[in-house]
Length: 110
Ligand SMILES: [Zn+2]
Image (cartoon, rainbow, N blue to C red):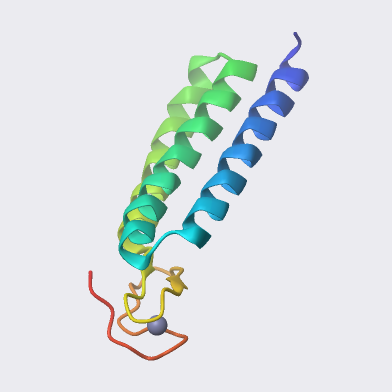
């Protein structure tokens, strides 16, 4: 299997993972959604990084890719939130954590 095909396979796996999590989170209550939404972000980073390194197993790529994915996953993990009042998913805007729900205005718990 060549590198292009490996990358495509990895991105299909990532797409299935994201769609499955989006579907499950739509069905889950807010507290469970908050827990698994943050976990799913870490999973997205792991699947993407593993897919890229599977297609191009070179240490120079890993040297840049792994810290970048770790940083973005950590930032999303810390800033993603779910409103316990209405269940709305709060995505980060810039590098600030939102204090209030953009849909219902309720104060968000960390
Ligand atoms: Zn809300």
